[in-house]
Amino acid sequence: MKPLEQEEKVRKILERKFKTRLIKRKLSIGVRSDNSPIFHEFDIVSVNKDFEFDRKLVGEVKSDKFGSENGYRTTRFCRMVTACMYLQKIKAKRRLLVLTDKEFFNRFRKDVDGVIKDIDIVHISVISGKSNLKIANVPKINKEISRRDIMRKQNWLVEDNLVALYIAVHKYRDLHYGLKEIISIIPHKGFSLRIQQFVAIRTKGKKGLKSGLKSPLLKELYKKFKDFEQKSFAEFINIVLDVKSKVKFSD
Image 1 (cartoon, rainbow, N blue to C red):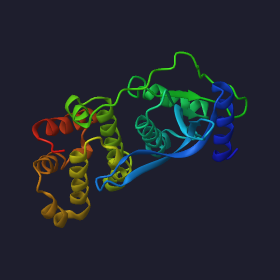
Image 2: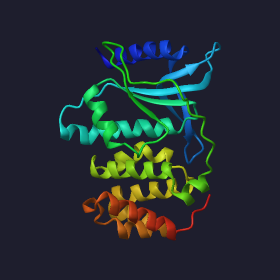
Image 3: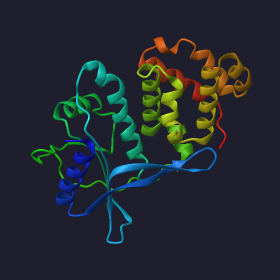
């Protein structure tokens, strides 16, 4: 069964469970540094009778198979984490990441246990229609968190951005490609702009370094990150948080 067919099957299964209309639709997930809106197409979006998003349910459907350990640890794992980050940008009563392959589901859920919160990671078989999804105890919509609070408290959203940044470098081995995928959802505009400058430095060599090293954050990051591909995940996180704690951010 092709991925699009699996998506449609999952939507029908969930429609019966939640007794609501589900469609595929683009939703706004933020604003870029130039104030242009950012949209992402979600596989599962609940709508009312007027086909307006009613914020009851939003989700993504992934049909990736486990395959090999190497394959799981590169593209597939990063795709799942990115999907979770997009889901966290939407305020809804329930957010789902649906995985149709049981082996992949078991492995991914184990790896992100306690890390990814407020998202139900569930398995739904497109063949039997069986799932481990429970529809009781629907959580309340999360309150809006200000950008300043996010950066100051270094909460779950910032940690997820750092996870994606780490994956972009260590798994893709391509800072520019990986960061291009997550740059729009870094919650603080000032930090986002500085990261873009950092990308320019790393991709344009000395020419980019000369034009980009103007902010204190960039200077610190460049010094700290010269050999960061060899550092562990814990060291990587500590470096970023340490640099951010020493630099004042502007709105």
